[in-house]
Amino acid sequence: MFEDSFVIVDLETTGLSAQNAEIIEIGAIKVIDNKVVDTMDVFVRPSRPLPWFTTNLTGITNEMVDEGLSCEEALRVFDEFSEDLRLMAHNAKFDMSFINRYMELKLGKKPRQDTMDTLALSRNILKGLPNYKLGTLANHFNIDYSGAHRSLRDCEITLDVYNNIRKVWNGEGV
Image (cartoon, rainbow, N blue to C red; front, side, top):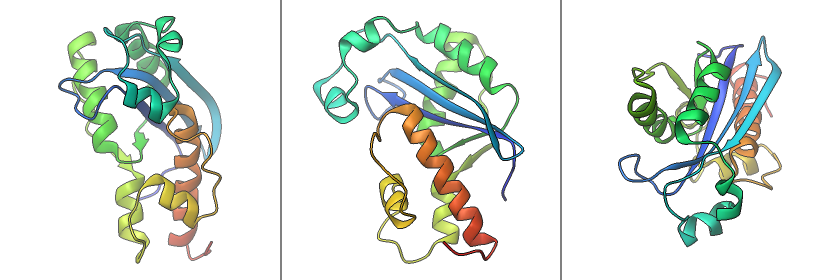
């Protein structure tokens, strides 16, 4: 159930559907033998100006993404960074819907199916929380949630949540 080597990924996007929204930021943390060995964070240049709600939620502006990589370049960087390590995300279904769609569309790569999801883990192991949003879990574990809704920061929070869930599972409490 728990692994020691993986890549945590988080995306910021222009909307909720991979069918009609775009990736604007990819953040990732590479963990090998339970140690952070590398991080990446890249802006992705969208095809049209950012919607107001995206900028309001993330703090990412058009000026920030104007200098970003193309979607294809950003995915190549992420693909090289993640190697063949298992991916982890909070609400992996969301992030993987974008990654898989755009990896296939832009790079011709088959979808990655084997992912870990801290949302599913938390639902299975932690009982009685009002919901299992990343912010709720961060609050539950006393993890600083400032800077959330930016890819790399969400990866850091997700890693802290994962490590705390592992402690609970191992009977170490939190």
